Length: 485
Ligand code: 6PG
Image (cartoon, rainbow, N blue to C red; front, side):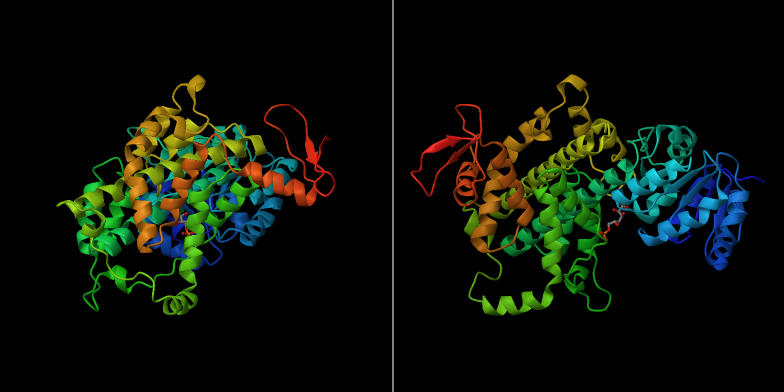
C-alpha cells in the first residue's frame, strides 16, 4: 500500500497528527527513531485508519506516493536539521518536507532556501491547539511555496479545526511565514494569559475574591465580549481543589512560569521589525520576574513596609455595590488590554510582512485563529470584520470602529484599575503598559523631541524640524547656533 503522507517523530503531537490524518481517510506511513513507539501507536490506535509501519526513514520514503510528503514532528532546533539531512539523499525533486513543530522562523527561512536549491519544497507549518487540537482539529498556519500548498493544502484543510464549516487552515505566505504567524499567535497567547493573571490578582488582592468565587466570575465573563478558550479554562483551573491539602490548586502551584521560547522570539522580533509589541514583551518579562523566586522572597522582606494584604473594594469604590463595580472595571480593563495586545500583534504582522516580503492577509490570519488554537476567541470575528473591506483596512486595529468604540467604553474603568493597581502596589504590567501604548498612540506630540535634542547635544545625532525639511544640528559646545547638515 502506498501512503499519502509520512510522519516521523511520534511523540504525542506527531502521533496525534498522524491519527488525525488517518481518521480523515489518508494512508499514513509512520516512523520513529525507536520502533517501540511506532508499535505502541499501532497497537492502541491502528484500527483508526490505514497506517504503514516503517522502521527507517528510507523505508518511510519508499512507502510514499509522489510528490512525497514527509511531516517532521521533532523538537525544534538541531533535531529538525538532523532529520532533514537524513531525508535529503532519499528524496527527489518536487517532494515536500513539512516541519510542523514550533521552529524559529529564521531557521525555517534558511532551511527553505537550502532545500529550494535542491528542488525540494520545505514547508514550515504553525500548528496550534495542543495535543487535543492535533488529534481533533488544530489551527494550521502553513508557509512555504504556493506550489507546495497545492499538494499539501487539501490534506491540511481536511484535518484542521472548522469554524462554521470553514477550515482553520490557509496558506499564509512564503518560506518562514507560517512559523512567524504561529510565533505571533504564541506571543498573543502569552499576553492573553498574563492579562487573565493580572485580573485574578487584582480581584483577589483588592476585592478579596477567592479562587472558587473567581471561577464563577470568569464563567460569567465568558458570556461577554471576552468569550474565549483561555477565559473558559481559567474557571476550571480556579475552581480546582488540591486533593492533598484541600486548598485551591492555584495556591499550591509554584508561582514561577516557564516558557519554551516562542513568546521571547516574538518580543525580540517586535524589536527587530520596529513594532512596539509592549504587551507581549511585558508578558515575557512577567514570566522572567516570576522565575526570580529567591530574589522576590528577599525583596518582599526588604520592602515589607509597603502595601500588603487585601484592600477592601469599599476603599476603592464608595458605593454599595463596590465589589461588583470593581469586578466590572477589571473586566473592562482586561478587555481593553486584550484589544491592545491583538492590535500590537497584527501591527507586528504588518511590519514583518514588509520586512520579509510576505503578503500576509490579516483577515485570513484572524480567521485561522477562530477555532482549534489556544487564543480562539469571539474577538477574532471582530478583527476579521475590521479587515473585511480591503480599501478600508485600518492602519492599526485601534482605529477600527469596533475597537475605537470598545476602548472608549472601557477607558474610564481601565484608568481606575491601573490607578488602583499602582496605588495599592499590585503589579499589573500589561494592564498598565497597554494603557501607556494607547495613550502614546493617541498623543500627537511625544517627548521624543527632547530625546532627539539630547542625542544631538551629546552625540551630534542631528534632528529634523517641524516647520521645514532638512536635517539640523545645534552647535551646543560653541555658540549654540543651528546649522543645516
Ligand atoms: C499552541 C501552544 C503550544 C505551546 C507553546 C507555548 O498553540 O498549541 O502555543 O504551541 O503551548 O509552546 O509554550 P510555552 O508557554 O512553554 O512557551
